[in-house]
Image (cartoon, rainbow, N blue to C red):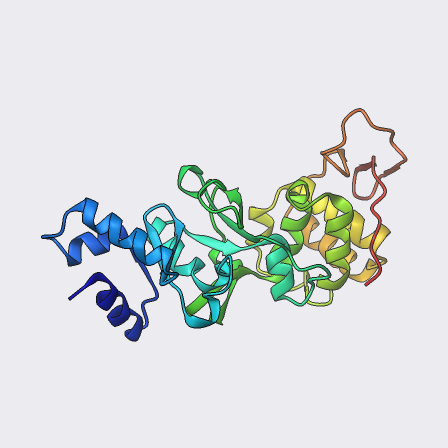
Length: 268
C-alpha cells in the first residue's frame, strides 16, 4: 500500500488528519527521508497540507483551490494530537454565538501553558491565548465537518472579551461584540465556576461596560449580585490596562473603575 492509499483509507474511515509519526508506524520499513519526500510531493499536488509541524490534513476537493484550509476543519484533531485541552474563544466564540459583527480573520483558541507547542509561528491563522486551567463546565460543543468543536459559553466568552481585550483590538471592539452577545448571556444562572476562572478586574470592567456603555442594567445587577454572593472584593482598576499614564475621565464607585478610555460601540 502506498502512503496516498493509506491516507485515502483513513479518510474513508473518517480520519482526515494524520501525523508523521503515524505514517512512520504504518510504514516501518520506509526511511524517514522517503516518507518526508512523499509527504512533500503530496503537499505540492494539494492532496494534503501541513497545519502544524509534523501534522497534516487531507484536503477535500472543495478546499483544494483555497490558499488556507479553515481551522474549524481540524482544530479538535490538532489539539488531540498536541495533547492539550482547548476551547474556541474570544471573537471566534462570539461568532459561534451569533455576535460576529466582523468575522475574525484568525481562529481564536484558548489552551494551557506552556506555549511552545502552540506558538503562532506554527500556524499563523490560529490566534492563541492561555489559561492556567480550561473550565470544562463552561464549554459547549458543536458538530463540525470532521467531528465536533469546543467553544466557550456566552458568559465565559463575555468575560474573555474583556479580560483579553488587548488580543482583539481593545475595549471598544470588546464592547461592540458584547452589544450582541449579551442577548445570549444569563449571569443570574451561570455556573459558579465562572467566578473562579475570570479575574476580579475583568468582572468589574464587564459590569461597568454592561451598565454604563451598553445600558444593560438588569444583567449588570445580576452579575453584581453573583459577585457579592461569591464574596469577591473589588479593588480600584483602570477600565483599559492597555493605556498607561492616561487621563482619568471619570471614576465609578460601584464597579471601582477608573475610566481611562471611552469605549465606542460600532453600529450593529
